[in-house]
Every structure is written in structure tokens, then in C-alpha cells.
Length: 173
Image (cartoon, rainbow, N blue to C red; front, side, top):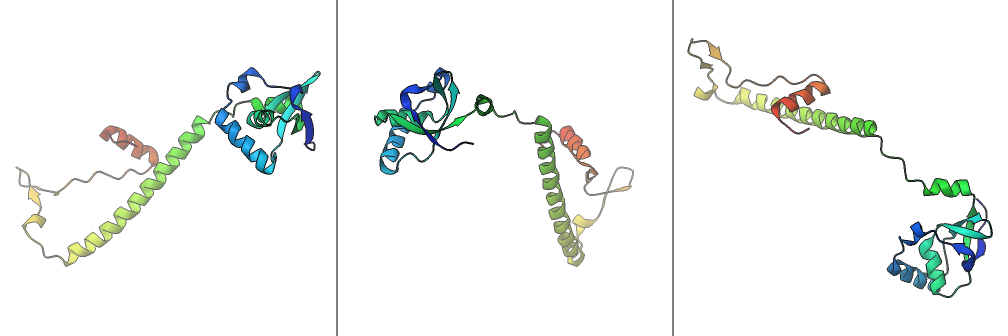
């Protein structure tokens, strides 16, 4: 990029689209700052025939106009650079966002599994030392066969199994 230059304010054209973004309170604050310490950041302009077109720095330009300045410090950039600066940022990649969410879910699940395993380890150690009572005896169905006290759902092996399990149970993932 080139060195900052002084540009005559009356030769700088502000596109209507940029002018709509003008905030008078920001201009006032910048004017006070410029009075105290001068213009710190140059504006960006591009050449267009016999005048310049503002690329960046609308509020700085308007603050200098309000102060009655005849010139403003700026950088001259090419039309191509100006176009690149005016392009909106590329849209977020939905596939990348999806992968990031899945990675986060996987990490949360692994952390939950680790905490469950740790609590089961301490619970089983506690159960081994605890005296057995009537609540610990297995229940029997009508045929007299013993059935487990609580049927535990099988832990999913993969993230896609876990997501399917969440969808079936109506859980949020």
C-alpha cells in the first residue's frame, strides 16, 4: 500500500449507499478526538477520473468537514482493492458448521460417559460395602423367572447411533 497523502475534501465523492450509514453522534465524537489528537487513521479513496471516491472512512471524512478542514489524510487504493473491500464476507460454510456442532456433541458425550463411568465406579464400590436388603432382590414376572430391576438402554457405539437414539427418544441434540 502507498504512503498516506493529503486529499482535498471537496474532491472526494461519497457514494449514496455509504452516506446512508452516517451516524451523527459518531461524527461528533470523532471530531472531538481529531481536535485533541489529530487524525490517527487515514481514510481510503480510489481515483475516478477527476475526483476520488470514498472507500472507507465516512465518519472521519464528515468529522473533518465539520471541523472546516480543507484536506484529509488518506490512502489511494486501486479500484480492484476497493471492490474487494466492498464485497460482503463469504457466507459461513454450513457443512463446516455442522461438523463443528457434531464435534462439540461428541466431546460432550465423551465427557458425560467419563463422568458416568467414574460415578458407577464409586457407586459399585459403595454397593459392595452396603448391606443387602429386600430392594436388592431381583423381581419375578408371572412365570416366576427373575427379571432385572431396571432395564438399561444400550449405550450407542458411534455418534450417528447416538443421534438416532436421541431422535427416537425425542431428545434434543
